[in-house]
Length: 186
Image 1 (tube, helix red, strand yellow):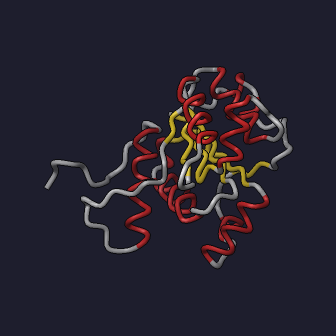
Image 2 (cartoon, rainbow, N blue to C red):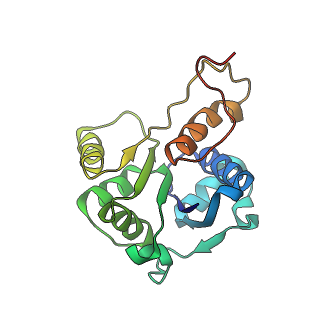
Image 3 (cartoon, rainbow, N blue to C red):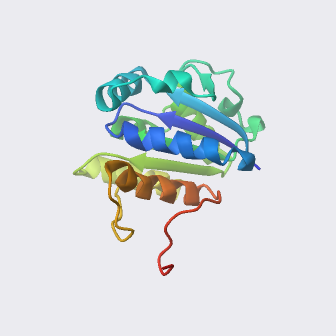
């Protein structure tokens, strides 16, 4: 069983976060604890992109950005996985530099130092050299950079289907079992 913390930053791509949370709730039998962090910008972007504030209605334990008493702020909390979706380049850069100025960056630092799974769903384009170096640093530290780059071989029909190609990949990277399109399956 897994303990997972999902962090949502203010980068564009709220649809990815919404779909991920929905799918994680559907497979909650594989998860011991599911926690949520959102920046103030993430809430604003969610409302702008999705025209709702349904993040308030999720049956998930929510933590404030400055709550350093959260269990995943320490390695002793034994959280297995952190998913930052979407992950802004500012957040990525702070993690790469080891700056733990809020709960998201502190939790990412803990996950990396404990050699657990950090998945950063970068949602910016194009990348500049600073972004690339930050991604390199996080990768060398054991993190996974999973750009929000959809695939199309499953022939997605809606924007949700397109976004789900990224979300399903993230869930696979987290080591959870889901029913999804698999290359070679007909």
